[in-house]
Length: 222
Ligand code: BG6
Ligand code: MG
Image (cartoon, rainbow, N blue to C red; front, side, top):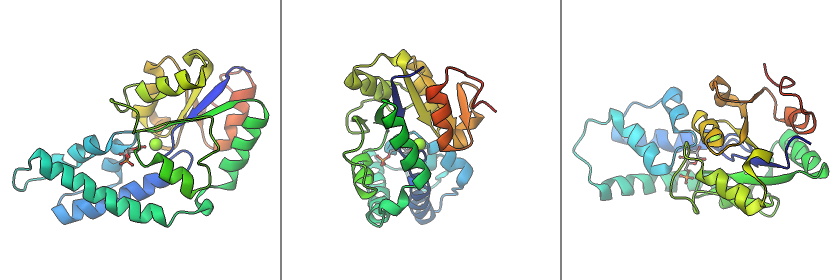
């Protein structure tokens, strides 16, 4: 097979927590009187919590905020977000995603998570995948978030597989950039298909089975 491992982004790839991030940030933005929409939300994909806040505050015209104020605002958003996460169940994992993961594993592929989120383990627990992946690399073990490749490099290192034999799956343009900066191929899905740097563009998650088993770059490119 072309790859020995696949490193999956979590939010917006394995499950639709990208929607929940949007709802939580929208709650905070409304309270601050800051304009926020789906297009701005797309810029937050793959970006750390504090960096996301800075993007939202680009449209803030209220009193000056100290670092402590900003940390409080980020905590407030995270509390709203965690309340939503508490309601997640295995129903938030689509059968297509679960079946594709199972089939990749049956083919002998190593599977890892590479997410900027500090809530990654909580989400995986909620959807019943906490003990599923060979490696979980997340926002709790990195200094730099995407587009820095750190989270993916750490995943490859823990898998003991060279970056050139890893495929990353991403819904964020910053995530595609991170994968390429780490010397990995990248399959883009959702919002990331706009990226010029993606090696594959997926319409459906199950197309990963073609990408993984055939050494043919054109198969899933559209
Ligand atoms: C990424 C999301 O996976 O995690 C970003 O795409 C988010 O939108 C980032 O800001 C950090 O998440 P958390 O859960 O640590 O606030
Ligand atoms: Mg994502």
